[in-house]
Length: 69
Image 1 (tube, helix red, strand yellow):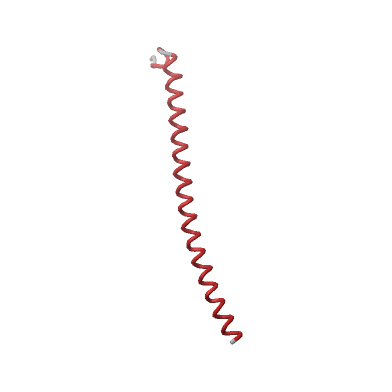
Image 2 (cartoon, helix red, strand yellow):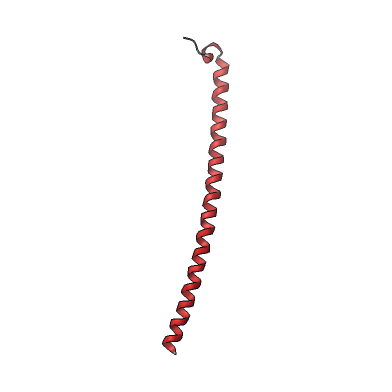
């Protein structure tokens, strides 16, 4: 049984090139999406960290005031 690649050797090379370019594009797109997702998660975590630090400072000030009277 013959394949298109066997009848037309250039077609196989073209298909391989197209597949490789599509794979690179897909990988770049996935990487970009992953980076954006990670950036969003990082911003969200930083928000919560700032919130926690603020609460810790508030509690610390009140403890210090309670101790030093």
